[in-house]
Amino acid sequence: MSDPSEHFIPEPQAACSATMRRRISIGLPSPKGSRERRFPLTPEAVGVLTDRGYEVRMQSGGSASIHYDDTAYMRHGARITDRTEAFEADLVITLAPLSGYDIRTMRRGAMLLTLLHSVDTSPDTVRELLRRNIVTIAIDLLGDPDGHTPFADILSEIDGRAAMAMASAMLASPNHGKGILLGGVAGINPCEVLILGAGIAGRAAAASALGLGATVRMLDNDVYRLRQATGMQGGAVATSVMHPRVLENALRTADVVVATPMREACTISAEQVNLMKRGVILMDLNPDGATVCPSLPAIDITATESMRAVPPGTRICYTCIGNTVPRTAAMALGNTFLSLLHDMMECDGAVNTVRLLPGVQRAVVTFMGKPVNSRIAMACGMRAIDIALLINCI
Image (cartoon, rainbow, N blue to C red):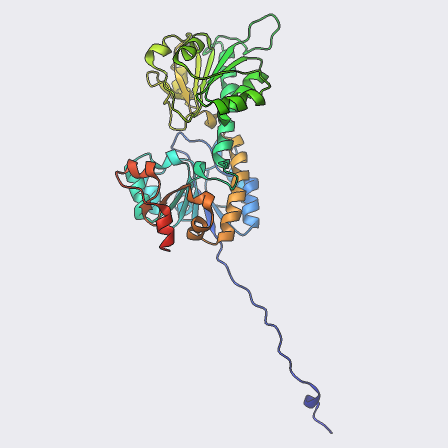
């Protein structure tokens, strides 16, 4: 009888193999303690990230400013931690300025996604980022292949819309305003809104003001931006180059003045401020604070106690307008972060992200322990290093 094994010839079989990739952790610290109220992600956005394999660590109570509790984030897979553990993540996302202690808590070589003006709050903050070898990226400088800046653009649009919503409410207030509507009532002259700057924030503010029935005038030194604003609004916005006499005449009659970021900075002098009406509503949307009217007191519009102390009719400059609608900002930012983090995961690591994504390179502030942004380098008394030189050394 023959051996059964003679009829069976063993054949090689493909072995199942898998590459285990460590889960990338994302830290979401609370902005509490700063004047920043915007939070970067909603629970729904966190759910998408956890489904993609990220580990999301959120500081307990971090989302209180957008009226979500910790349970909402836990249901979408987030892990609720203390502040220290949130900062120990591979990738930290926050819009609020950080203290030196927060940065020292971060893992060496980690990545920080924040705003440019949140980084240059003090030279010590920048030096600590360099010591910890943190890859710092200013999201408002991030670009896409088409040359757009998605984070800066969406935040500017929100600021413009929010400015007109708040100005309308303040004008109608019998305490801080005149008890009047912006416009839209038959037989009554509408209020006049002056917008300085024809960028995204200015155009968004103009669209809202026109929708509320106001008369809108827009000034800028960029004729191409003015032409774009005129075309978008169907010619309803009166546009002009910012000649001194034109500016002064517009300030005399304006009920609301909205100052937006411009390519050439605009400053309203003390003499020009005196031309404005008593009780004029002045909103400054520049991210660095009240840079347009240095002679006026600047008040965070969300600081209720400070606003109550302002006598009616006083000329003041309101700042931090985007903080009035932090939940809207979270929804908009969440959509944009999902796209960015998807691209970053494909690159596999902070250094590869900077090396492979040109739009990210333009937004890097600190890299490999060196300042690569001229503004940040100047803030700490150092010379900026060309990031291309550092990338070639990798």
